[in-house]
Amino acid sequence: MKNIDRREFVKASLLTAAGATLSINKVLATPSAFQFSQIKLPYDYAALEPNIDATTMDIHYNKHHAAYVKNVNDAIATENIAYATEIEFFSNASKISMKARNNSGGVWNHNFFWQVMKPGVSNLSGKINDAISGTFGSTEKFKEEFTKAAMGRFGSGWAWLISDNGKLKIGSTPNQDNPLMDISELKGTPLLALDVWEHAYYLKYQNKRADYVANWWNVVNWDEVNVRLANAR
Ligand code: MN3
Image (cartoon, rainbow, N blue to C red; front, side):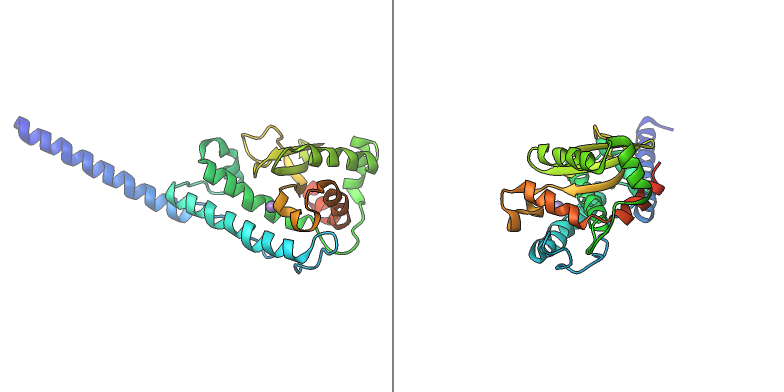
């Protein structure tokens, strides 16, 4: 092979290899890539009144939450993110863009938040009641500590009750981070969460986050928290 031919041959092979790699990635990424979706709200917008007002629920679900879904799936497509499950996705949160991290957390956290609330009376009972008493001393002590986490989160974020290898812990995360993310200081299986972004309460409570937190206890879905505990790692 003459030099010039050889150069052309190598160039052509590299181009073919690059092309093949690209199309393989495309084929692999497209069908297996995990996409985030928004759950159907399990109750009407007005169902949590007077603790959470209907207008806030409507805007929170249809504008804020829906936007996170659109934005994370845009990021998955444009950045070619190919994780297969949400757990794998969050385990690699340190490796994805801020857009993907913030919006994936935004989707997951709200899907979770809607489910750990419900209208009507839900009693703190069963295994979660035993675990809370065992860990924090009493329901009151637990609520005090959780409220402290919710009030102490400066700016936007979330307060959490998690199971860390079977041990209950309370903490908070900034922005839309969550305890499933590898970058989170608080790590474990979420059992209960409270959104303390101003968009979650400002229309009804304005600057009074403490009143929002106090009234939110009235709509906690303890049955769901028990289910999460039963399935926690
Ligand atoms: Mn929110």
